[in-house]
Image (cartoon, rainbow, N blue to C red; front, side, top):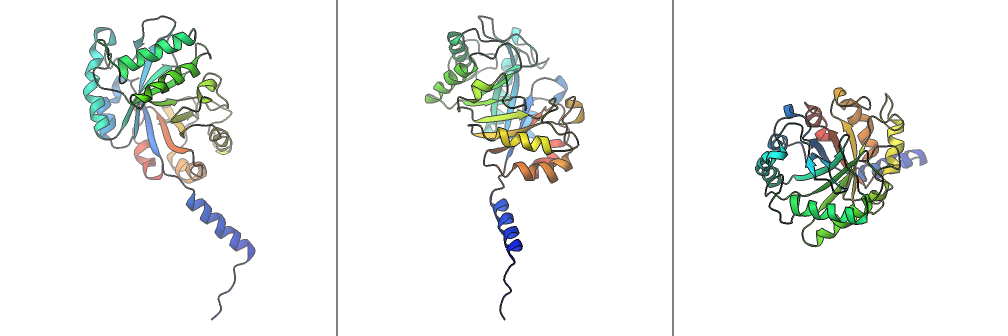
Length: 294
């Protein structure tokens, strides 16, 4: 019996489906930890099995000859060396293949870089005190973090590219992963120069608290801006979302909408890395629900 030929429309549909199936990329989940004492320990976050990247926030004071200072919102007191106890938790996470990074900046704090030399000095401080270097005053103890995250939302737009380049230089001794968390309006005012270095491994874009590009009952704007963000030169781009309705003023995407509408669209990009959540405290069930689809 002769097989009936496909109509041109059916053939086109078949080809499109084939392409979509071939170009749907698997991703991971990143989460911020450190800004609420009721979120459990760092080890708890990693032992959940939901995250591939855990970002400790924040080193909120640094640059311009200021004494660098962690703000971990009551988890520990860095001024009395209490935060060195986190070293065991960091090792626990890393033993499971989870990358643990330190985030610079945040929404509050005193940070800015005064010059290229200032940027290089901050890079040296970070290497010696949190990464693969040596220091007698490592705030998080002897554990060696996997990298540095840039959550720059104030101060100045200057010299972040120099800091990225200086940190990247240390990868000749031991790989330093570099990431950034820009706001979703494109390009991001604060981190444009850092992103344009092309040296960032991960860019988790904050698609919340930003009305032009966040989900608002429709995902059209989000998808349009996602296309712009995946044009950047970076290793992977993540969709940054609030982990509950209480986690941000706007931009929350219900898990069923994320799974059925948003993820199928954004996973077609080869730059797709997964989903970033703010934050561990708010993530009661969101990561568990979406993980099979990410």
